[in-house]
View 1 (cartoon, rainbow, N blue to C red):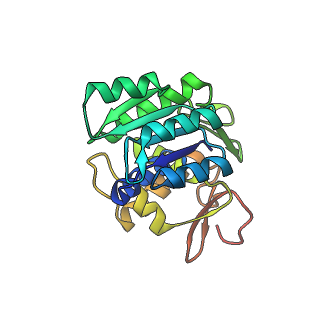
View 2: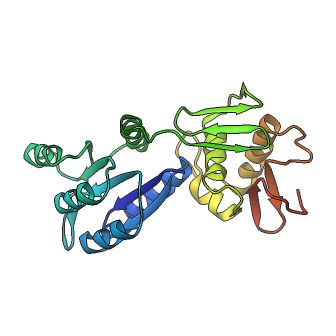
Amino acid sequence: MKQIFLVEDDSEIAKNLTFLLQAEGYGVSRASGQAEASSMLEKARYDLALVDLSLPDGNGFAVCTEIRQLQNIPVIFLTASGDEASVVTGLNMGADDYIIKPFRPRELVARIQAALRKSGAGSGVTEVCGLSVDTGSGLVKKNGKEIFLSALEYRLLLIFASSPGSVITRDRLLGELWDAAGEYVNDNTLTVYIKRLREKIEDDPASPAIIRTVRGIGYRLGGNDAAK
């Protein structure tokens, strides 16, 4: 699973971005300022950084410089300003791209995928029970044969693929999923989509081995739970 380093001081924006990126199969670690970002960069490795230009204790330019010194990863600036000078400065400092707030979620995801592909870090494959999920190409295969999923079914599968073997609660799934119209999925709809996804990826949907139910809690990708 690819790890995104998010440097954003606005907690609401950070929350929404985290939900979006986790639903797309990425892990997300967030720093709320320059000092915290510096500390985190020394302790962990990431695959891409999303950096807000305006920070309460510094700025995104300084964070970008530090990233370039410590880790060879793509950097995308998030900025509320369309000021050309700021954009040019960021690109000259080594940023790979920039996106101006407010931005469309799908545009941001596309920019991230493009930056990861360019850096050679875009592909990641999760395999379980003959199912293969390639987050780089977006391909899902079962025993080598491609499976075609709806956008929401694919997003649901990516959440499981981002945490293989871990129990994922229904509350987390409900918080991270939304339908094509941008509305959050309710509990009954989630049950329907779990059923539809199982019908496409399981050998025996009535006795699932890939998306397994953990009674009273949620679901798990693979594993050896007594309950299915």
